[in-house]
Image (tube, rainbow, N blue to C red; front, side, top):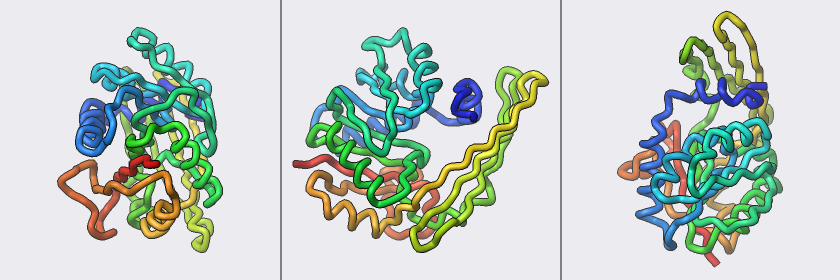
Length: 254
């Protein structure tokens, strides 16, 4: 699968403005963290694209991912950083982080949980890893609008250093009652005339705003900070209309 080829994965997402994303994470920390931040944890880190920018801002980076190829690629890529990033191979549903962190984040909707039980285990793990007063940043993980409504514009082609990649997402509703849906990600690679096709299928449970708030209110270890649309702290979410990429901040409490 594509996750075993980090170089292709990086090309697929090379359109991202990493410095701008890190600047936004810093703005969230500066505005809402109750503690100084020295160590950050990225969940589902993949090739850890933010590690360099975060290190430049003085943060120690820990990346968690289930795929060994991704972690080995990231460790080699960022081997020159000081302090050197740490990488942890683990399932995001339930994990142990040896070192306490001050800020945790997950990006691009990469929070794959299939049940309320898995959701509980995940937030238990994050609470255990996160120092009190620290923030957990979730990008595109709470579905403020029906994910099927944004299913028509998920195809694009990108080229880098002679490698052309076509990427397309399709979403299929599996079970409305349990809010389960299926993502099918098809990637066609033309690597200097060598063609590869990858198809990844992920099942996920949509987490809706009301459900998330009820879940959070039942926990004694997190509090809701806020949610915004399109990575803009000037645009808090006041309704579920026209929100395609919500970001959510919660804070670890006693």
